[in-house]
Length: 402
Image 1 (tube, rainbow, N blue to C red):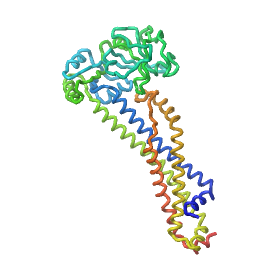
Image 2 (image 1 turned 90 degrees about the vertical axis):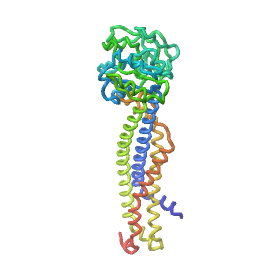
Image 3 (image 1 turned 120 degrees about the vertical axis):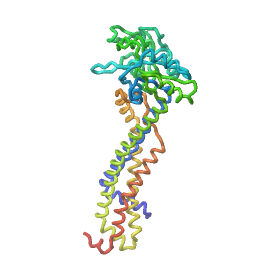
Image 4 (image 1 turned 135 degrees about the vertical axis):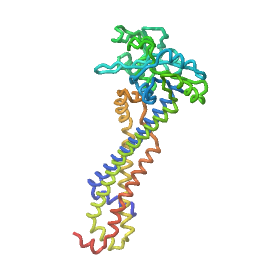
């Protein structure tokens, strides 16, 4: 009988203990894979959103530029505003291909938050990948009774039942702050970004809703030459009362935030793996204690220390391998449901760049293999001491044990 088959049969002599140990390893493996997968998925989603913005430079009111930009991207209310004179001075800076002013703010009621984005035709030109559902259109800059809905608000307002439903013209959206309804002239196709959660209105309508005529919360800029974005940003920074950041700077800041998040995820994973390793170590030690007489018989009939060590170590490896495989397989099977639950919860949080269509869980064979190898390495390390203890038992002393 080979060593591997012998070790495998030994595990079934105590099925309850083996099952509990394998289950603990499986849970730890599943947690490891899911946390790593969702962490990478969120980082990739954030990077994709920044790249899809089509913006090279973002101008915001004075304050912390990264905080202000993050608030604007996530539907927050800015602490200050830009005026029309400042916007005109920004537009006059050489090297700018397109400057799109926008006004973003939110109305908060007991059970809901509506985020409005006031804009003109320049924003539509800037975000050329936006697509409206068939039958819809964008409003004119001076159209004061029109709104285009993101797919999220459209579902909430029952304009459509599901994000992929067709758009039927003729609906209206009642706006209490205006005291009148706006005609729904279009619905934005799902983008998988925070854009899905906004209500888009002409700038004058947004100013009327929030009582801020002529105010702007951000100016999104596309430069003629992306390589000159830094120089254009420096020129804009000379204008009094503005803060300027480039998308590369914002991406760097977000990446640093993700590194901090990865450290937190790593700490959680370390705790889960440590608990699993201690459980495996305890299980194998108990097995060695209970099998003292069996090990003595093996030693008395010619088994060497290396063979006893290998047997116990292989048993540990088998439990680790089975637990890791079951855990990763279970995580993959539950990834879809877990993603839907997490995204659904996070999409309701105003200050997270997650929409109902964001993809966080994507199968990555490297992550799966990495999780398996990490758990196997921990299992091998946890099996060293029980294997050494078993191999050092003297045959006579072991046979005396009742």
